[in-house]
Amino acid sequence: MINLLSNPEAWKRAKGLLVGGLLLLVGLVAANTAAAQQELSQSLHGVFEAGVAAEKAGRLDEAEKDFQQILLHGGHIAPVYSNLGIVYQLRGDHVRAIAQFREAIRLQSDYLAPHILLGASLLAIDKVLEAVKELELSVKLDPKQVQARAELAKAYERANNFAAMLDQYRALRDLAPGDPEYAYLAGQAYLRVAAWCLEQMRRLDSQSPRVYESQAEAYLAQGQTALAVRAFQKAAEAGPNLPGIHLALAQIDLEQGKIGDARHEIEQELAIVPESVAARAIQQKIDLAKPNP
Image (tube, rainbow, N blue to C red):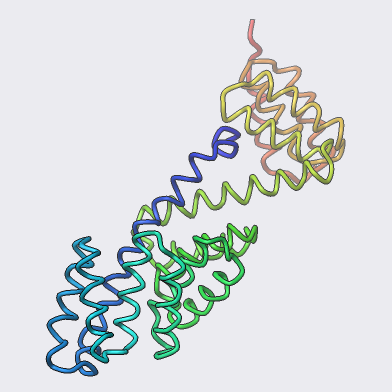
């Protein structure tokens, strides 16, 4: 667990997997093609369709030329500005992209795609609080739009609002229960929150029994049993009445055939929580076990 929590590459992968999702918004913007054509003159219909096709194919210079041509001939409508903004965004020119998305929103405030895209570009230039505000609005416009929630989760993380970040990943998991990607991202979010909580505990009290307990659990996950035992023992010293510590030590002793030590630990656990079903179960196993020769 410690390796995952302290290794930024694991979390970077979780975030990076969402970057490509922005390209899906090209389709979301282009979904307004029919509406756009109703507002464009007949002569600009084909230009708009060609621009969208070029954008999807990654021919950004061609797409920019088409959308600029539409604007030059009076086609000042939200889908055109949104698509032109995507061209700039894909080039990494977020300042110009932001201007296009804002104009699209000014023309059509309930148009979802430019809100999401604007939030993403604001996040890219470190305007985190503005990005959060814009992406929260996009989620309100369509709570079922997964890309809105995915971008909002990233914005919350950048804002160090880890509880809100986790809420978004939970929502994504609920929206797509059969999608393993969102299950993976939700799991990574839990790990990130756990790491943050541990950091806060260490900052507030580096000698907290919970800090030692977390270290012990991490060592166990890595198979470093001796280090785990020492960390559990420190937790027990720092928090003599903390439930679960002696239970863990009893389990380790039982697995190693140290029946006397296991019995001592489980008795201490039951003295703290006499109603513990888990402790009673371990006690029964200890009573039936034979010590190592």
